[in-house]
Length: 181
Image (cartoon, rainbow, N blue to C red):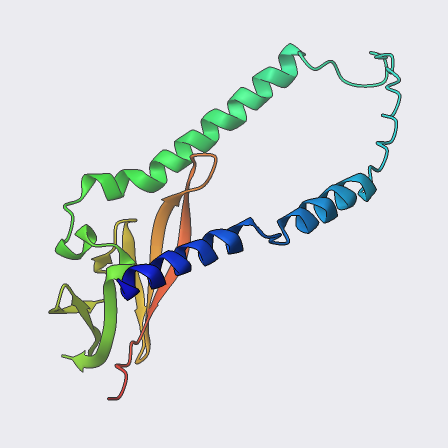
């Protein structure tokens, strides 16, 4: 019985406590005041510049659609295409070597030596060791080895520039030293 009276008293006390002011009204009043006082800062946008059209005066410059000018441009372009084709044609006609299937960034030079008086570089690709000499091909851009030193391999690659023309580019693979543990 005493337990019931004690729980009834606790219930009454809790209900009376919930009816009191909780400070929420003060918070709402403060938020309303802050909203009323806040004013956005807007910077005005400047007026756009007035466009003044310029008349085209044909006497001052060359006619853009001159037949002679267009013919010369087409001749230059066809000569350039022929020289580009001459650069890539021998590469397309030959049989590819095994290391041309891998990109250069998948290869690592791990050493060099002289084999029968010829400089030879040691490469690892997919955890396999390969020996390469001058004239061998590496990488996917028709890279031909032009020089081998103790610390690097020099390659001449044939790549396309942003305009689609074939150009030569010099690249090198440097000796990769493993990190000491």
